[in-house]
Image 1 (cartoon, rainbow, N blue to C red):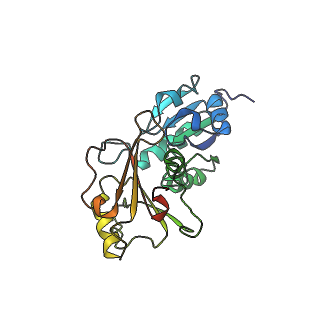
Image 2: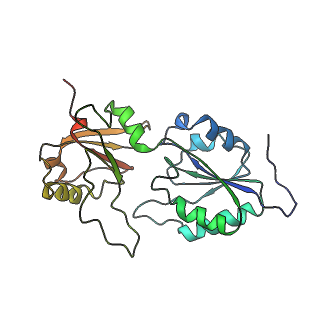
Amino acid sequence: MSFHNTDKKTTGKVVLLGAGPGAADLITVRGARVLAQADVVLYDALVTEEMLALCPQAIKISVGKRSGQRSTAQTVINQQLVACAKKYKLVVRLKGGDPMIFGRADEELRALEAEGIEVEVVPGITAAIAAAASTRQPLTKRGIARSIAFFTSSTAPDHPDQTTLPDCDTLIQYMGGKEAIVTAQKLLSQGRSPDLPVVVVENCSRPDERVQRLKLSELENGLAGCKGPVLVMLGEAFAPRD
């Protein structure tokens, strides 16, 4: 079924779509099909040109947000989604990774639901899963790691930073490059071993992917030279195999 612009005064549908970790061929089949039918695509800063090539027919609007850089405010994105849905049949909000993990989906769902706009969520491969595959390091391991926590140090302006980190076997920190020193200090203060294995993945699944393997005590020195999105994975599950 194809979707086209319409002059009728009807409200369209919005799809919150996960683009995956970066590589265009890691998007789901359903996700690629939705992009091929979209009238408008509002996309994140981490979405590649190869991914946008999957929707040549669509109007493309950059609404990227990158830490520490000038970006589109979330309230403006919400307003754009509502406005587009009132003009077009199929609107896609294309997000890096999975929309429901650190993707600000709650704000967008609330804004759309408040206007009575139909919303569908199409999942994507989140960075932690892609990084585990790329480094060939399972996030769980029999007898060693049975629990996983995804966390980020980024908080809303009116929320305090986390004083303690999750007590799980495997910890995955999203957007963890600038927070590496603080993360290491908190974990060491919580009694984690200085020898705890750490794997740092930058630009996961992209041609310029970079992997660093170190110990928690070394992470306390910080991460130098990281320019792309950084995922920090910590736990005994990341110890090198014999």
